[in-house]
Image (tube, rainbow, N blue to C red; front, side, top):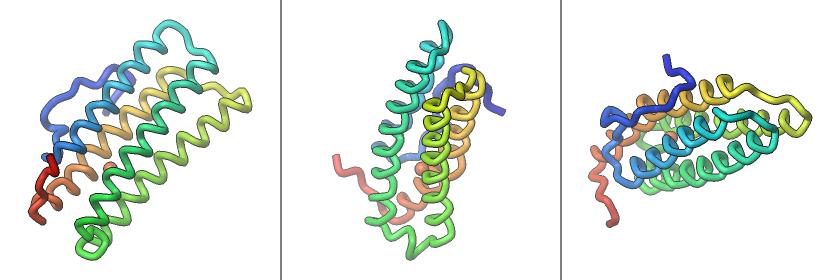
Length: 146
Ligand SMILES: [Fe+2]
């Protein structure tokens, strides 16, 4: 069970795909920075800023992964996993959008609620779904473009 405490990066989070791992580290840092910024006080402006920045980086990151899914024909070779993975991305984005709509209507979330949700989602998604995708890419002969 992941709490709202900062995430300590460890190598069990590595997918083996450099580009994905670097972006995951950025996401972990973003959540840990949000944690620090929300320690002082929680205002609607701050929640809006944090969720906006996070959503835009998360969407960029999902696009990176989904471009790799397409390039390596994940849908053709692993249809169930491909769909499950894309659905998890979509569901995350929808939950953050719903949260932001709530903020606009004056429904704030607590630091604990926000960070527990974000930390849990990210760690579970990396450890299960992204690592499985990393193994798939490596089994298909993935080579880093750099
Ligand atoms: Fe993913």
